[in-house]
Length: 461
Image (tube, rainbow, N blue to C red; front, top):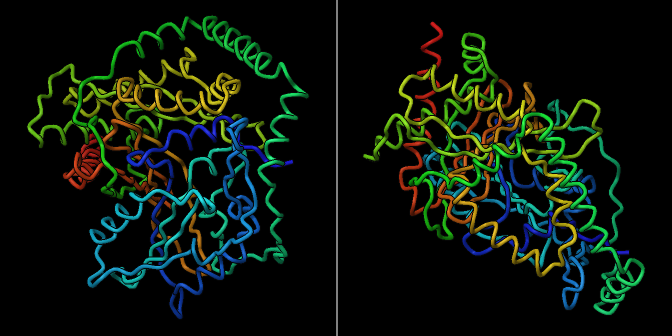
């Protein structure tokens, strides 16, 4: 039996267009060990570890007539050298040159005829450093227990851990007739599956509404928020295929110091920092900023409980960032109040519920629905801000110590910039993925992030 893509995962495939590539990525810099670090070393490491992520040797196969969702099949012609690539920066190998390379590499869509990932070793950075750039399609990494290859190549010590010997042999791909037969068999065995799933989704939705209503009518206030279109902003524009990438580097201790002095959470301080940065950036553009100016951010937050054994459970909060507030401490208090209100009222929408609500739609409806959702996104929020906590100790790849890790979050239709950040080994690293034409001043916004945090830290003295 072929492994069929889930409704959520397949939606990312149907959502993809030339201007909205649906892959996530990252760029990490490394300090090479004694003896250096080259392509052969990374290639050998990935070749040894790829057995830990079986999906990375599989590709997507459509079912004829789209009778069912696509399936994952082994790539009988899998060639790891196609996916592991090398590049080099011309001297002097500055961070500006690295950012330019990241933007160009992330602009290109992944080849649908092959496993949906790529990884690049970039040599020639200043100070003898190297960088690793990853690209992985959302359909591969957004599942319940999927793992990114960028994770499995890392170790907690300079000495790589031992992994089982790889004896992988690709399974023969099912024929078109076999795929159609499986799809029809599923329908025959479960002829009421679509109706049952739809009925179950309605029941789950009613239960969700009841639960939320019981804690203060949160669903109503969330509906009111989403009924109001996001404020008009330069953050929303018609986007093209090309990207521009910017980075900001900050210290985790600064966020903790601000939190200790003024209260809230580290994530609240992050959002207050972004608010201040957006305020300054808009002023540099000559935009009108009044005391009531806001920018609506969609903020994915993990809702996995202590008892969960794994998987990704994420809720999305819509937060109006107080861009018009000139006082940095007041901005923080307003953000903390808004986030606390979300958590107490249950106004978020869980990813599990969304999967169930879309599970009964046939693939063609998924395609239409995803495109409609992409079209409406710019009316609901202005930008996405994702904050992923990472380990606070050094990690290594075949002996090379990872120094920095910047995420690359894909853009939706009408979104000129997305902001992702990862905390790692005492640092907080922002990656700004931007439309090339709409955001020629992406580096200015990155600089404003560092200035905004410094302003908040200044209030703690």
